[in-house]
Amino acid sequence: MNPVRYQRKIQVTLVLISCCLFVCSCSKTKAPVVEAVPAYQPPPPPTVQVPTVVPAKQNEVEEALNRVFKGAAVLDQSVQPAFYAGDFNGDAVQDIAIAVKPAPNKIETLNEEYPAWLLRDPFAAEDTRSVSLRVSENESLLAIIHGYGANDWRDPQATQTFLLKNVVGSDLEVRAGTEFVKENHGKKIPPIRGDVIGQMLRGNRGYIYFAAATYRWFDPAHYNGEQPHGAFHGAMGRKS
Image 1: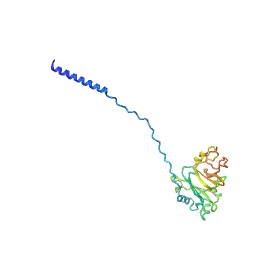
Image 2: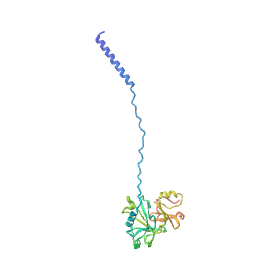
Image 3: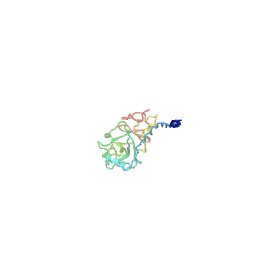
Image 4: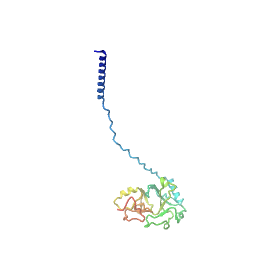
């Protein structure tokens, strides 16, 4: 055999063997592993920041009294505690209820014709105006200062105030309006818009609540289901 032809035959044979080995190695290569798509997981719900209710301090309460009454009313130290915080008018801003009495020699200021506050009697059948009501010497009264903005009743612009007669009793407490309505579900109660102030008064346990234009007294033992004058209709509760 021609040496040249023999050498070429060997070369072709080697090339064929190499190709076969390459094809075999490719056929044995494992297919790449495809990672499973992770299941969708919704993001955690955002954390709700509940506003912190800062306890009222006596110096802050006295400052609020001076802002509104200009020294004509002072804390009634015979009532303990003498002040309570709560959202009494239902506007989601904290208010302050303060037991007060006339300052010495300031009774005329509390009885001026056009005061900077609203003098009211929650027991009155009608929305009695300040001009027909009078404050007496050493009379115990309840001042409710409505809050304003983020600084609530502490804000310098928080001056809207109701001065209430005949509603300073004993064993005072603040009840959340929503809880009060739930606890009295199925019972006859007036429309409750905000927090209520419970106390013992005139021998009965009752509550002071906001009725849009004024504050009213609610006695569960004697309430007949009638709507008081000026009641707020978009309230937490309703008559049943």
